[in-house]
Length: 292
Image 1: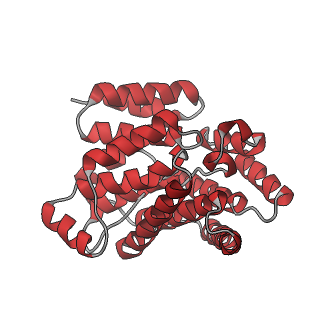
Image 2 (image 1 turned 90 degrees about the horizontal axis):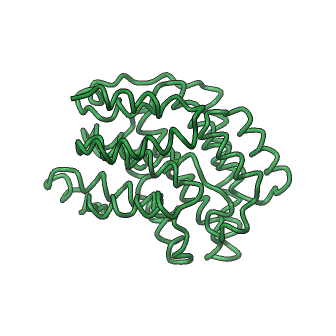
């Protein structure tokens, strides 16, 4: 995907922004993301490309086939859960950057109406992924795939809680978990550039909050630095594999919020060129050009 978080009480707009981003950290993890790119499994790689292109049913078929072939791998079900959440975000309009570029629009957002069947499938796949990941970690606490699966699962739960259920307390809990898992993964594999997405989102969002709010969150064990967050997102955007396109989406949103149109335009143009079948990027480019 990839947030991270709704914060506490009325940390509404920052919270949801963080979570969308975790999201869609959602959306995207892959077995070989913590490994050398040369060992990437083509089927999962194709699954994520299909998901970015909004071909959700085909992506689901890829992830389902992976689960059948590798039943003990936690990344199969967590990737399928990511696809389910991403499809709901797309259906409900959550992925439109315009929605998050305006604080007033975000504060006035309505509670969304999720598809109950999708929600149940989503939760079931995440529970399955976590069970498989914990079994691997019980055997080897440094299992990269398991750590990556746990990072993604926590991020996906945070995004669902913040952006669909509007439950900021729950979102904060899962955001903290996602960041902790990503830190463990980076300690095991510093070259897993996709893992920087989770901490980058958290750092940016919390670092953007008012000083009193940052102080309260710090007491709860959550801290952030806006500049450091941008730098981590840039690492994933430039050197990541599966999450690199998503990191560029998040950077584009950050640049729009910072009124940095040239950088936002560059990010969106690269995404439009890579995924021409996804209308989101062309739409946001047009909106950017039409804006003040």
